Image (cartoon, rainbow, N blue to C red; front, side):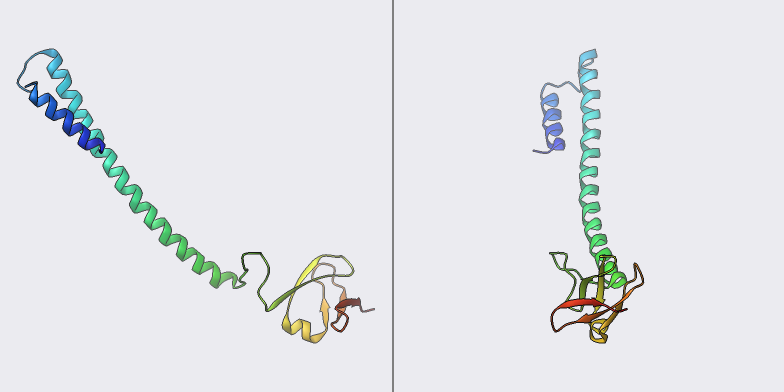
Length: 133
């Protein structure tokens, strides 16, 4: 039972006791309290409805933001945090920082580290990187 339904039930009980027509101070107090409870019940219903609407709007905005992130960042990561098949992560032999390279850089065979600036070649036959001097 919702709060409005409970307040309506309470109002029905008060009407059954004929408190609306009674002139006592207690009857007036009870009638005012029931009126306040009705307003509170309606306010709560409005808040609950707004909450549902806002939740739906947040879901839509979240989906739109995910689309924008895909367009802006363009690099898709799978659930494990590994990069897509088009990118590879190697370690610079000089500074030992991880470097992300694409298939084109891998095919060239020589990579320049963006961290330290050293160039090193990629020897794919042994799957080992050697430093160019």
